[in-house]
Length: 184
Image (cartoon, rainbow, N blue to C red; front, side, top):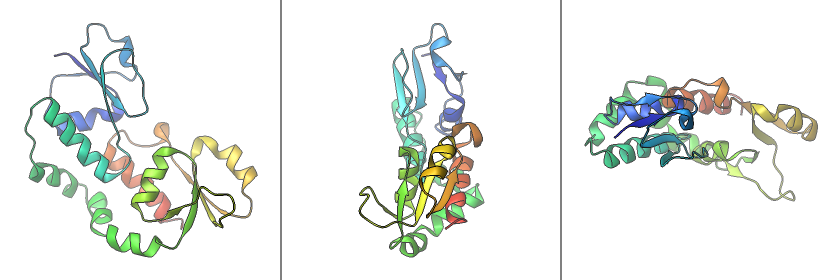
């Protein structure tokens, strides 16, 4: 089977035990491919496997999903080693219960689905109702102009989007989690 994978998903494919694939930011431009592995929000004209890589849990689930589909039999112990080898990721994961407890009473407004996943994982209350008070707005960098003009009375936390973060999903998650945690 000929697999094409986007750069943001490549590490998942490697971690799932697949070695034979093509990397292309634009998978539909590749000829004679059987399947694409892409981020969840990405659409392709070919058969594809869409994966979410915003939270540490989603990263683990995606490794398992790709391993199961392609029958590479990656076990939980191997996946745990991947996470433990990234000390920053492991430290956040190891402290998530405490982080969630500390954040449980903090109301935030979030722009973007990928950030909602992270903000939920960190235990914040996401406010969708304009009549409920919130003091923090978390938004992706591509909305900078719009958000800064709308929300002058709130603490604004700008989080790097796809083009401004590492391709490695663990490093990308660590970057985004730390931006939020270090600015609360």
